[in-house]
Image (cartoon, rainbow, N blue to C red; front, side, top):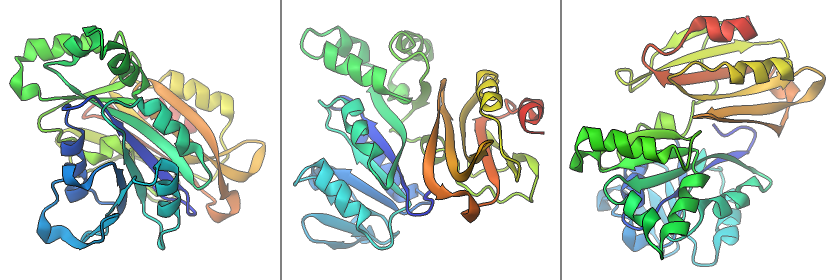
Length: 307
């Protein structure tokens, strides 16, 4: 969701070998948005040569509209270059170094023109416990886990299902509110990583479930309306999110603040409400989308607070 030139940012972190680059390759070939991806080394990105339109050493332009940019001159300079693109990309994805704290990278994503969406951390289900227990890597990997909004528990095809469940339970000790997604080859539906696309496309004032490209895995629910929402009511709604709803995202007008829209988003158990520079007059309607496990969406939940 890119609104009025504001670019949402997804930060991807995780220790060396966890599968970050595999995830990036998957996103670049499957995403429905025009992505700008910041990477440390183009050599790690295995892009199909038939997809590359141009490559000048610092940027790589793909046939699907995505662009990869090197961080050779530093993260801040690379981000400024992305914001200078015309047209601006729909989303910026930053791959943090395998030995970096993604929370530090995320700190850059509150600059004007950017909006931090989520910190995604990829972990190797076979080795993550050993990495945390290691005297040299333990503090670093534990910090990566704590920074995550979404944990991709990768390589589950190499481990017995009960052991996968055990690792996911163990991860709750480091990231209790983060969404945990088991994955093979880091293949994850981008609707979960990137939240919901807005506008929702529903009729004015409409609500109810809607279909998605990964309909067999999850279900989405959308709402739109012209009335401004009370902040206390939004807080109560977030506190009452049913189990099985993984993401809530939207642009809302708040009671007592008619000048601008606010971005509401929840990932796992964490949620935030942040002001944007989008004038309320540009989008007269508030819009919300919730995504969850198929069958988890309960119309009564949002109708109770928005109806």
